[in-house]
Length: 182
View 1 (cartoon, rainbow, N blue to C red):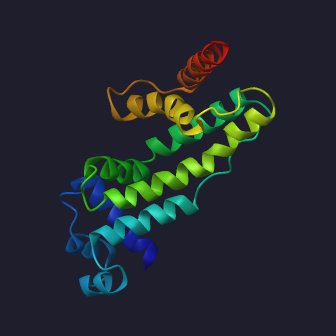
View 2 (spheres, rainbow, N blue to C red):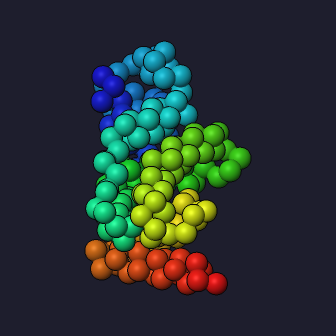
């Protein structure tokens, strides 16, 4: 039943977005009674929270290629692949549409905090290897590499192929190295 409700939630989000997400629709799609959903999940915010937790549990292994360049490229390809998956796209679009003052804001903050915490070891390993100066802002570095990929996928529909990913990594690393020399 949980898998059916999750799939139905993703389908409803994909079709209607957050504003059109209705427990009744999810229940009908999943083939369960709406009282079952209310009893188990409580409402649409809890359905989205459950999807976020499930997505976090399905995280792929953090790359450890031996270099920051290799780690960032592999990690950014993983992010790209996750962004283009329909279920993730619907879920992340929902978080983005929620805004900072919505009922989804706290869910989003927790989701992103966990994602950044998971990615920081890549940067910490690079500092330990001497590839980056101590004190580099790991979260800012990650945002600057992954941000263009997000924009490419959710914005104008840029081709976010491996060459694009490699270019993002190169630009950020060049800027990080230049900043470190000042």
